[in-house]
Image (cartoon, rainbow, N blue to C red):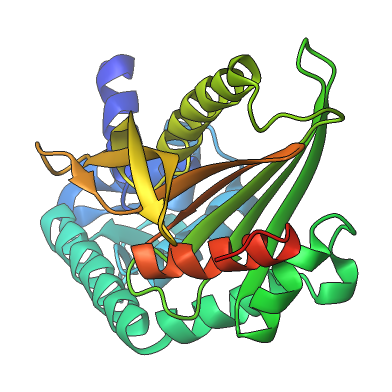
Length: 293
């Protein structure tokens, strides 16, 4: 057999779960048909050492693609090994994969939610481990059942020097989009009415937000962040209309609400599943910043 054809067949057999050497032995036995052959002949055809072939044959028998002949006419009663039908073997592999897939689907239905909750508990930040700047804003939420699963602190030395505090929160009231985002940019000067600095942060958020959502691995192929406005507690604030385009869809979907809050020396960017959950975080920020509601 041509070596390229042989290697292609071996590569295909490996997709069933066989190793390179197992595939080579099985292919050799297939070529010997129903008569099979013995280990010495397999060694000659495959260049695999005799002692190794015995252990590989045991594995192939266990995988139900090779059998040992009951009687042997080979010299010195050498054992004969026979390949079982490749079609039947592949069918058995397919049936096993389908069974495993069914088991995984059942596991998803029964345990996925419980396992996810356990995972979130294992990465949850307790109040005492929160950054001191974040504690006043996040402690009231934790006390109401929110969970903090990520906190990243960064400092920027580029033009607009600031500190950035980036957190991921889990709201107890979220139904589909469990994550909520809380980002605070802290400056060393009054930023509230500085349009240049605010525009810089808005453009930074737009670029960073799109990249992070697409790279999150949740099946999103594109994101639109359109400048918008939102009304909360009787006040109008800048916002993004965030629209997701999923791999299996052709239409963009708006699944979250967001707000941008320039307050004194800080800019807060918050996004959540619903307007009501958004208000819950904004209310805490306003209380910490002594803004009347």
